[in-house]
Image (cartoon, rainbow, N blue to C red; front, top):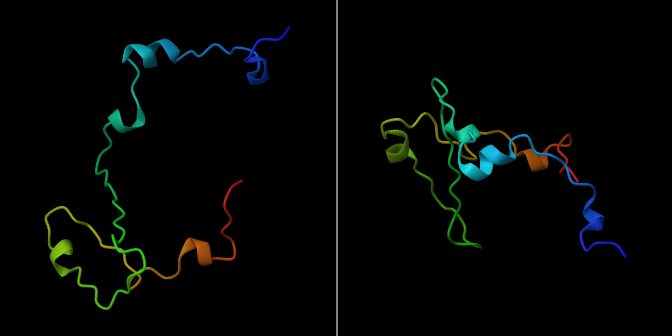
Length: 88
């Protein structure tokens, strides 16, 4: 008789396992990097709406904002590029 988890494979020792479950592990977000910038994607709360005007002047004027990317300043989307393919 095989165990219920036999399809998963042989157990593998995780060298970082103990540190992760005890809270001692350091994750990528916990490393300090000089001049690190963060990006935020904001999507419309209206699924089938139509944008008639876009004014990012107040947002770009905020302290710490480096750039606002819109259809007006980014040429083409990756999904429209012939070289783009989702990894399967």
